[in-house]
Image (cartoon, rainbow, N blue to C red):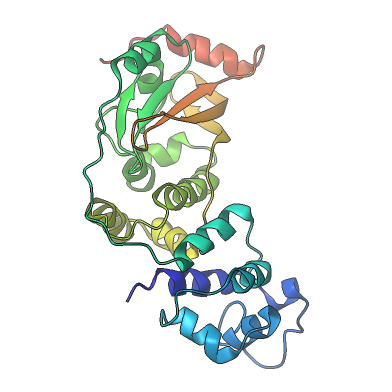
Length: 271
């Protein structure tokens, strides 16, 4: 039976402390890092037996009222609540479909005309297309590479990213938001398995079950040739592409980062 709902509930309750929901910590050592099952059940107004069935995957159809109560107790934001709702609603099984990952020709042409780093990637974070500035900017923005694999396993990417801890947390939360409740995707399972084996940081973050769409962010990079850059990231869905996203990075005008980006544009970049 699908364990996704139970895994999510367990991971999220372990992140909530008794103090955050107004409970006294109690005496002695707690065997769990966050809330106990009986505490979640009490605060949500449901029986311990029913909550246990949810965590064990023996009941996957809680009412909207129960979902709202659990979201409140687990301190979920709107996006995580929507994710919980999707886990709790049975869906018809369907065979995995091979996604169409061809970047539209006019989009590739557009990338080449932009004077800011720009790239297109799929839901697995494989880079499918990138302009010259993107390839010059970072080792995880080269077509043919997987941004998650580079981020978690390439030491150079660690050195490039001044906010590596924050960036990795955002990347994993965005991956969960991207894939939603797709549990039959062998390609996804292979990527998660590989990263879990190769990176302790990935294992820790994946176990948290954070869900967050990163549509805008700030990249702080340490480029070996042009120095420090602070770039604003804008992310867009490519309409009709089956999950492709475009990422554009730009600097605030008149800042040292804008000067560094202009300098980067003058450097030779391997094609």
